[in-house]
Length: 114
Length: 112
Image (cartoon, rainbow over all chains, first blue to last red; front, top):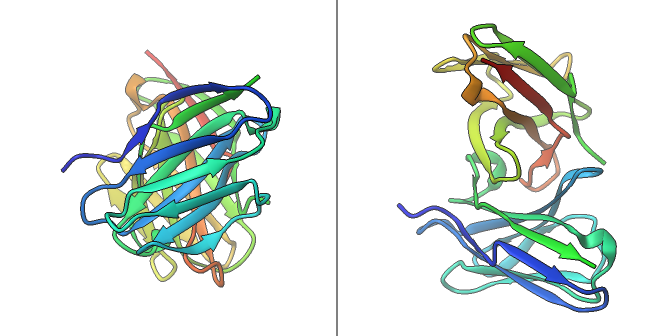
């Protein structure tokens, strides 16, 4: 089975711009979770989608949004970028509930905001 | 805020030695998972242990769970240089609707 893929792998944006990141889960997985990883805050949960519905959301401002398509592929969007949004963004897929099964992580998208 | 806290934050050992990492959490959980992350890459799942289990093994890995102390430990036996990575515990607090909360990790360095 192909693993979780994320595009792009690296991204440099300017403050105030917006960005869209993409995640393709493992075939057959219906749950996609997104995480932000920074040296200071560690791994923080952004949101989880299951069958095109946002099932859980972390404590992030409304500038962070996402969606999931019928083929389970997911995108996350960050609007009005701030310097503090510089991070590694990881997505993970699992068959159903993330806590009940191992999650398969993609390689991440490293976003740098200047 | 983080649910799990790993201890120590960093650990440096020689190849062949055992490495023990601990994770403490605050609220009741359904499951606890351990993941490994090589520098700047995605995480790799190691073990999932359920709240009604006390110990689990996978190859050179041994995980214990003590729900009364709200703690877990990950033991890597006969470590290798390739085990150099950050190790995270992840918990799903009851009422969290199934999403995982990660600790800040233990950075393990295994010297050849």
